[in-house]
Length: 349
Image 1: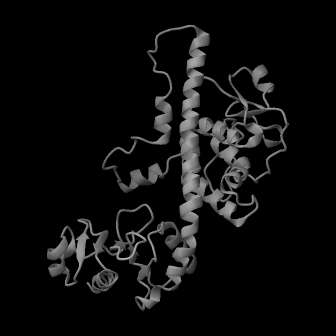
Image 2 (image 1 turned 45 degrees about the vertical axis):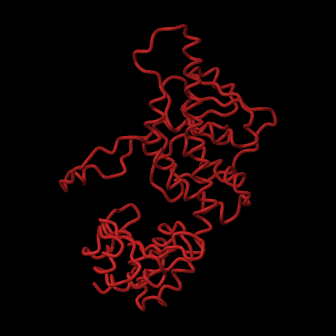
């Protein structure tokens, strides 16, 4: 594991960032954008080369050079001796992870206006790594999300290909095709650099949008979910129904609370209004077995699934029903009383 080292105080003149030319990947595309979010690197010149003499003149070098030395602003991960990881994670870092490790907190502080040493920055810093950066690190280092040998031994096979659209593939598509027409080497490099900047913008703007979501939606929702979780037994003596005062991102927070408190009975259904206005319809959502699972702990009753409106009222025995999804993971009712009764009846079945 790599110890987090505060970002070195940089020179006042606009620094030059160096990275390699040729085929580019998502990790260095993001690394360059992250640096340029900081005032010290904005503006900054970008040099894409593998020439050691040119790289040695750069203030900061990422993803090339065979050296990891924060004190010298060198952030490569390709050397055999490199084994560094993010705190409390096991995935080897790429250039994206390295830059995020050392500069992530100042970037988050700048965008959110939280103090760099605040709890809020630390929480978002860890969350952004786990949900965004780590997958890039793993992809660039050739690390699978699953133990492929264990899957093979268990006879588990994919039902379909999941190598479709993702950030890595989108960046890869911006590289030149193998049969590009020959042209002047300088013009070829200029075209390649332009495509790299397009890739860097794609990665960076996606990062910022994700960060703003965690800042403005996910983090504020934490207190709402904590309060609802604490009050859950007023709706069911065993705490299997959790009611939210409004629709907020709740899954991460609920799983975290259950992991830390280990309640005897886990939440089966989460109830919340569709909107903040008075008279809004209500939703009942079955909690999934895990955060990324499509399997629910207790799906809504089979007889209700795929049925709507008055017909659902008859089948369910509750007035005001709107729908229940065909898979049983979510349903709706026109009123709070109706959705609460749906949850109670579902628990009995």
